[in-house]
Image (cartoon, rainbow, N blue to C red; front, side, top):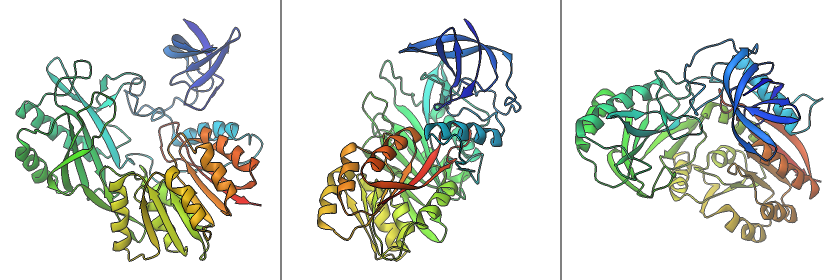
Length: 438
């Protein structure tokens, strides 16, 4: 056991402390906390710890909304005032980008609670009781909530009806260790106004007992449900969704809006978790688009960014590897009568290089890559091309900072950098960077 005083919060949401030339990273801790901790594990010369007792609480510990925050892995800071959350994020955001003496903005989220439009809940059986909730931090043990401030409360009501069906139909939840059982996850996708909800039942095999009863139980009580689909994931791994889908009711997609645009979203397609905050980022992206621009929207998902900028740009090409997302994007373009946008089904890394050689008029590329950021080759190919402007939306400031350095070393200047709180109550930050070739 160690008694530590937390100096600050760093990337990853950990409180940082030092003691006798040792570095400690402490879960769920805040500046000026004095805590007694136990070591969970050591990584290189750093110790990762869990609080055993709070000896003197930080000033940040002023709210108590969720009693599960210390064990649940879904969020980190739900019991911290929102302005304080932004302050903590702003402090380590500046350190990542070495802007300690400059103002670096973190845009507030328009919606702080219940903002997630996508949630998946693991299902387990323990002592003959069905558990549906979130994984405890660093485990695969389920934590159940009376109220979770991340997802809309209506989903909790739907979960309880599904729990009744699971018990009635004697559906066996999946056991990861024994690789037995059937029901793996319950998933939900929903529109911002909550008038369209998809229910996703993830199972090990395609058999689903009493599926008609499930459809009846849900649709008679929740008119918001527009689709009930079963996804089959037969493999013993942590991948949530499999390749095969059975539609038991309605459609495997729903509709939402981007201001005056109507968009179609397949249940397996990527779309931003916090749509209202995403719209703020899209608006900032649009400010960097000119009417004569020929744009690539790379890692486009359903093409929400590409669709948004197509109303201003001359032409947009979206590249996306998920076929369901591509189909959604094509349908959304037709719904909005956009004739200057095309969708390409391929890996960005596979297709972009040939595209840059063939289309000499492309002058803007928008990246929205996964957390790992861009491959070095991708950056080098862009830097060799005639791309004048690079717009980079990132969900990980560490990989963005790495990629900023590569772009700057290869002829691009950073003209714009801003953070956005896409994920309130967590330590995560979304970013937008704009580079121009000089």
